[in-house]
Image (cartoon, rainbow, N blue to C red; front, side, top):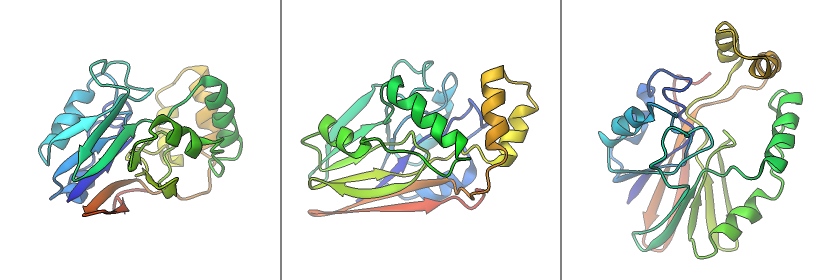
Length: 212
């Protein structure tokens, strides 16, 4: 069984519509799980586009205030595996220092600050934990569980930072984007596929062709 895993689409919040390569990468999956930051108000259209591929379950991210109908977390049994889905944002006492470090290092460093342990504590019975928020793809195991972040569909690349600066944002966003536009690392937008084969699980990150 193949399950599509998507996170941080931010459509239409920042991106007008879901990029075509997302649908191409996910074609043929039996289920799609969205790890949050769908896109805020109007994000229903993003979920509707994904439902053209397969049934969709989604959780609410910190940018999804306009999607109050979404749960903050999900746990479900699929193919004999207990799968948990959460966005992954934590208290602001952790999030704000982490964001500051990420900004000052021009996107090169995102401190995890016990994220793996935190995720495992939230879902002690899960076989698979899916999350997003960091915009960084990651596959690891913790206490027998597979932890999978598929990466982000929407990325604030230097080119995107310049575009958003042209929209005359508020001072906080303006300051943050001024730093981000000087980043030198090459990010790749991505989605993921979770493969269930009996007792085995496998997570694969699928880059999007149009990512910069």
